[in-house]
Length: 251
Image 1 (tube, one colour):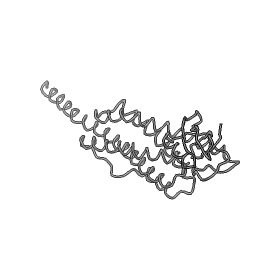
Image 2 (spheres, rainbow, N blue to C red):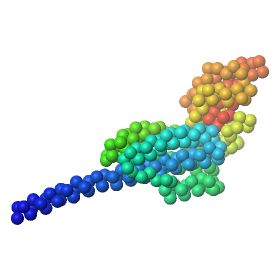
Image 3 (tube, one colour):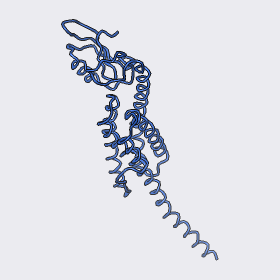
Image 4 (cartoon, one colour):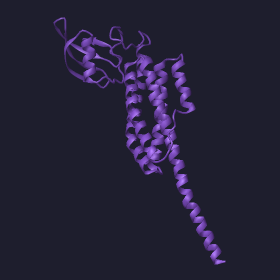
């Protein structure tokens, strides 16, 4: 009788020992599936944005998504391969539907893209936070921990862009639509909003508008680059907003 009980106990322990890795693999695979689907959506939607977005800040954000998520996707694929986990070849049905909407939708592209990015990054941060804390696969857990700060940075960026879009809408509604072309005059410019132009890009944009000797550029708390320049032989103050509007003499 004792022998039979011992054998039963050993059999149970063996079954648990074999079941545990299987359960762990299932959890790891679920993370890979969701992370890969979200990452592919980021890259694919942002490639669409590169061709259809009107706001320069949105285009710049889209390029960063292509670069950052492209690198993260490649790293995830490498780790998954080492762990004998399968990476989906394409994104999931829900994300495909959103991609179709971006391609064919009649609503404002920039607003639709920004909203999707806000939702996608909220989901991604939640997914990676959970796995970074309780992940069952050491390499994937490290990947989640290392990637999470970048996702949170993206989240902050898109929230600022969303805020800038709202500011733009309220500021220009009684004047002219927000523009991103330097050859179009917006009487409401310079428009406050999240500005993704680097100092070098801002200087180049101002020079393209006919100014020379651009210097002392600083970005104020409203997202507007301000500095000094010369035009028609005169020293003037100059400003560049997030839409690309260049305004001389702005204080």
